[in-house]
Structure formats: C-alpha cells, structure tokens
Length: 269
Ligand SMILES: Cc1cc2nc3c(=O)[nH]c(=O)nc-3n(C[C@H](O)[C@H](O)[C@H](O)COP(=O)(O)OP(=O)(O)OC[C@H]3O[C@@H](n4cnc5c(N)ncnc54)[C@H](O)[C@@H]3O)c2cc1C
Image (tube, rainbow, N blue to C red; front, top):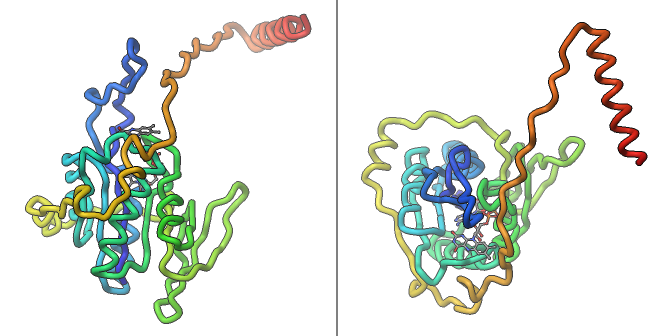
C-alpha cells in the first residue's frame, strides 16, 4: 500500500500580521508550520501503513525551506519526501500548483504506483480548498473531500469506504482505489513522535526536483499558467466593543428595550 500525502508549509496564522501601508501579508512576522490539516493527513497515512504495510511518501511544492515540513513528516513516521522547488514555479495559483504537484505525483507513481493520495481539507493561508480536487482531476482519479473517518480499506477489492462531512451530518461513500482524499481534523488525534523518528528526521535529506526533472508545459505553471489574479488584499474592519449595560435587572432590561426600539426607529427611518 503506497500512500502519498501533499503537505504545504504555511505561515503560523496565529502570529501573522498585515502591513497596513501595503495591505499585504507581512510574512517576515510569522514563523512557518506544517498546514494543520496536512498533519492529520500524514497521521492517517502512517496509521494505514502500520496496519497494512507499504510506505508513506510526502510531496511539497515551495521554496527550499519547505524541506522543514518534510522533515516534520518524517518525524511523524513518513518514509520518504519529495520537494518540488524551482523559480519557474513561483507565482503559481491553485490551477498551476495542482498541475506541478500532479506532475510530481505521476513521476513518483511511475517508480512506485500510488494507491491513495491524501491532502488537507484546505491550507490555512490560501484557504481555497481547490488544490486537492485539482490534483484528482489532473490524475483522473476519484476525489473524496471533507473526510472525517476512514471506515474500511479493502485491498483485495481495491476499495475504500469513508465518512464525508456534509451540512447536517455525514455521508458514507465507497470509492475504488486509487483515489484522492482531503481530510478534516476530526479524522484522528495526532500522536507524539518517537525518538528514533526524530533522529531520522534530523538527518533526512529530501529528493528535490525542479523544472528540468519533468517534461512540463511551461505555459501551465508559474505566473504564466495562473489565470487568477489578486486584485486587492485588505484586513477586515475592526469591530468596536459592544455597549455594556449597567444597573439592576429592570434597569438593564429597560436600557436594552430602549436601545432596540431606537434601532427599529432608525431602521424604519
Ligand atoms: C494569482 C496568485 C498568485 C500567487 N502567487 C504565489 C506566489 O508567488 N508564491 C506563493 O507561495 N503562493 C502564491 N499564491 C498562492 C498559491 O497559489 C497557493 O498557496 C497554492 O495554490 C495553494 O492554494 P491554497 O493555499 O488555497 O491551498 P488549498 O487548496 O486550500 O490546499 C488544500 C490542500 O492541498 C495541498 N497543497 C496546497 N498547496 C500545496 C503545496 N504548495 N504543496 C503541497 N501540497 C499543497 C495540501 O494538502 C492542502 O491541505 C498565489 C495565488 C494566486 C491566486
């Protein structure tokens, strides 16, 4: 069973700041982390490998420093990692990103066929949730999105049964393998890494591939291959604090009803 996980390095958004002058993300203010949804995808892939055998491969597209997230995945129990890094990939939108990642996945699959591809539900910086479905359609395999549980894997029939989150509950879907699954955080709890995996990760060197490692269509990657353009980025307007009503219960109720009536009068005007 060969499972591959797409992992993105993202800014730690609990720390990120906006530059009020340029209205862009101040990336220098944030440290980077593994996209949290992707960490759960790695955990699930490692669980599957431990139960059924085989291996877990990691793929990431980004600058050379993205090798850190691959090391993090090795620490979590993954077996090998591939980093797709080249200046030609810079400026890629989700369409181009899914093209580049699918080229990498095809190359890995030629050497060692892949049964299951995992992605996170979404990346916490871009937030589009488009890359997973984009990869699946480029690979021509089924996509199972918003997955919160893998109910069963049947390697004889080559099928997987999953629970997929929907508005009022979940639906149970069966798919043929290979397929692509995007995961919710509820799918598992993250475990602690073992000391031996930590040592392996510290010494691990990822395979790095650039544009010359593929027969790529230059028109489909980087800025050229990106039909999306960001027109404007702006922080949400700051909300003012609410009004605090003081006094005993009768006074508070009166203040509240007066203020609601005032609101209605203003609304009617
Ligand atoms: C016009 C435009 C220009 C852009 N220019 C740049 C740029 O110059 N530099 C830049 O860094 N970004 C750039 N971006 C952002 C970049 O397109 C997105 O970061 C990227 O396509 C992923 O989209 P997302 O973050 O919405 O991921 P989502 O679709 O929300 O991610 C879903 C899942 O896909 C997988 N995934 C997503 N991205 C990667 C990745 N890189 N490697 C491995 N797995 C991944 C992960 O499993 C992730 O959980 C640009 C975006 C646009 C629209």
